[in-house]
Amino acid sequence: MDSADLTRMDAIERNWNARTPIHAASEFYAGAFRDPDAWFADHEWDDIGDVKDRDVLHLQCHLGTDTAAFARRGARAVGLDLSGAAIAEARRRYPDIEFVHANVYDAGAALAGRRFDVVYTGRGALLYLPDLTRWAQIVASLLKPGGRLSVLDFHPLLMALGVIPEEGEPDTLTLRYDYLPGRGPEERDWAHTYTDGPLLAGDTRSYEWPHSLGELVTAVAAAGLRVTTLREDPSGPYPRFARMVPADRPGFFRLPDDDPLIPLFFALRAVSPSPGAE
Image (cartoon, rainbow, N blue to C red; front, side, top):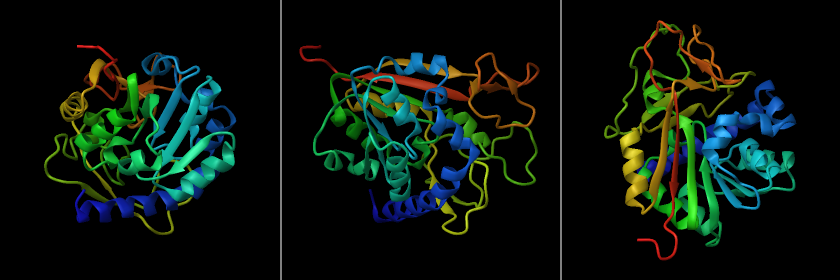
């Protein structure tokens, strides 16, 4: 990672430190704190797979809600995040779960060489990573032989449309940002965050990198992992557009029937080679 990206990652860390007290007090996360199991829909558990009695690492865990859901299902769960404020709040909420304060690119050293049956990353995480190739190499190094990577995230097409509309934007399917990587990050300077609650009082600057599905699959494959599932979903967990309607899956939303059928969310699973595998 070059010095410019290190500076950007520092800004991202400060931005998430500023968001943490707002998120911790929000109704958005209060409900998840009461019932982490409700954070995932049934079909998302199908994408993630069985975690019972497995060592599970949740990268970019924020307040640890997903991490707690894994623990509730019998996993030996560990959460890791670059925001010290978020990790402190996660430890307060879930004192029986291990949380580690580290940048994802330093995960190997921070975890002292430990390896896991499942490495998971969730909604809204990949866009804060400047280098997916290096990220995938780190994930591969964290997996046990036969272990699996599970990614559930917003589809990069939705990210190009804009997950959170800016003030004055029309409620239409309009490409606002790059879908393909190559032109560097988008700088954001927003006082709003995605939960209910007040505006950020400071540290509003952050950065987001576009990552196409092709870039993600190529990075994962180049790291020696075998992609077994890539599912694109026309519904997502948040109503990005005001005209979206509830989907068949509880807690998910889709565009109306007369809108184009486009992917809003995706799930990827990849596995690490087992000993003796060709």
